[in-house]
Length: 604
Image (spheres, one colour):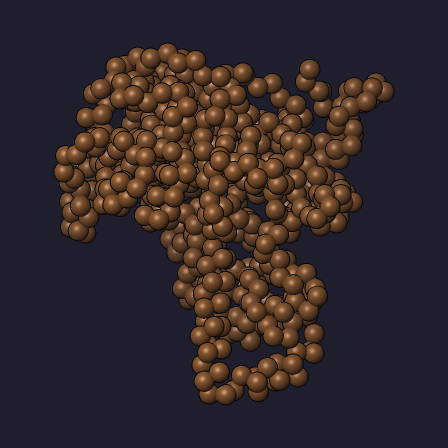
């Protein structure tokens, strides 16, 4: 039974006096009236999203890639052909098929083609170096990989140390229009990137491999509970772990996001696909949701601000899921007002905190709505989002749990539930939560208990049921016994008129244990001194939260979706500290500096 939304956030069952599982979920009273707290999910594999789009809109443009277009019927034929080629080459249900591709039509075709015969997709970032790729291929046991041809040297270097038996290489020019395909080939050759690879056993070109299949793929029984994707996570903070996502997980999250978007019209939407499909956020919110709506997928192989603006002007996307750094780049692009970007109706921002200034500026430019959401690879990924309705959203929060998603804020050590307003670890339960980590039973047992996934993120729920991510549990700075949450400091720094990007971490301090350091990128043409930034922060933060050290940079290290690599910043800081300590030890100034720090440190 689906619950009917009614007054005061109570369900109709609760009003009648019957106990309701939602009676104590304060967030429900802020659900848009169009969104039900419980949804009905089709008990079918994820590929049915594409099959339905093909059945309902066969002639609708499915992909646009540098101007080249494929209809849903054409995509479906190639998906079937790729699936048949996999089966003909020996790939069976449950086998892992690795994809190492930027956004391109081949990524969509290979993804759905592998799932069609029950294979498990394993996504890999094309930027991975040999060590990272080798570990994940060994861990997943992937015998097949589809990769960009420019990655040939990297993959062949580690092939012998992996289970790989089939390697399919493809080039972006294969789905580009003339003459852009020739220009791309010329450009890559001029840059010295090898595009030719010698014949070898088990190595195929994309076109050669597709010739093995037929337009109708072999029928394989795939159930909603079968494993669909291994999504590796944790690579920036530890050993990567493969989150096991089933067809049911991914189907549920697709329907949850669709319900939250409310106004998506099948066959009429255009999705700007700037988020990488190999990242769980882009995979679900751009690709799977886009396909579920039979959207036109406007595919960008990577995000470059001018390329994105040109695509927006030309193809008029209505939805643009992205990361804060993407919106920052558009907001601060000097000639942004020369582009008509008013077609954008809705944007979901994820992967990092969305500063209020970024949100306000982007909405002013587009006239659309930009809201912050939250998710994790282990949750397919979306668990929270702000309502798109202006009167219901709460800036500075990640919004409300999606339908069928239960949330707890608990003590990180005891898992005792915390009261509203108190910070604790965020725990999630819902149909989108993974079934565990691949080959990691011990880690699974620690993170997944009684259906609850303990995220490692510190959050709090306010009285209305809106949630705020305070920070990653591992990112908390403890200075002089005080807990400092970097996100709070970053929000203040983003308000400074000269600051374009900000990241805050803790660095070692002999007196306080840790102290706050800010890494800043300034806006073009703007200037600011470290002292100015510190004084500005003092006017808005308690003294113990104020950055003691400020470093200006041309750019911050980021993941492919724009999340700042704080661990890399911390490692750089640790290396610099070790070097400085060694130098002080040599000249005998170490003890003097420590005493000076102790004398000055009481200013807090």
